[in-house]
Image (cartoon, rainbow over all chains, first blue to last red; front, top):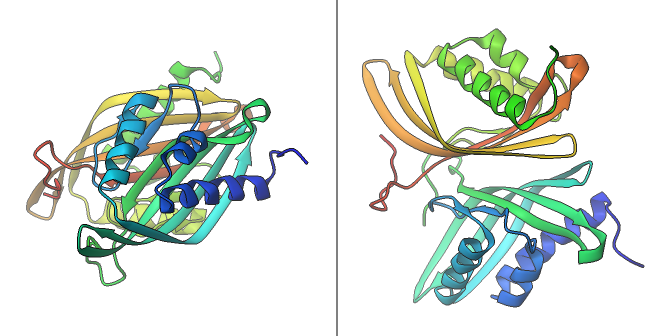
Length: 141
Length: 141
């Protein structure tokens, strides 16, 4: 059955985005993002990026510098407003850059546009920011 | 003339939200936010807040602890997708807490819902996070 604009398919599209990132799979990330140019992306601690070229360049740079990364997604909340899917969540991240292991948590706002012809929900907005740990310290490493 | 769901009215609703914050005007902030309970708010460095009560409690706490605050909004980009208004921007913040003055920049994702009966665009999602300064340092103070 074809994809449909349901909460379940939205949550699955969001999960597929993180699986693509975990797999360091650039073609899958390119497919997860909308093909149009009105893309917006904030990686934790980065400046805001606009446009498909800048966003995809950032993923190439991140994948090239990431040895391993794994996400545990918590507090996932999804809603649909017309053709826009809104997903908020905590990204609980275990990553390895060179020989260094990092643990961090980030809060993400992910916005998807539904397009049946393009295969369903496409990410066009990703805003991720480090979350303070419960003791109030920034969980940078 | 009544408000209409245009880019101009969306940008104005976004500006009104920051004017309410600058004025430390709780009733205006309560009016800027949607009356429903599906609200989501991330203040820079805070945990994610869900629901109108938690969000409004956070504003009460922020206003009570802020002497002066002024915003210069830059890179404001607005788009409308159905009934959802999406605004992204840099908040360039000058604030005073007690005798301490702070300067910081944050990137914000603001989502609005259009409701003619309720007077136009209502904020239901605010995700603000500190932006790295151009030299790569976090602009915390």
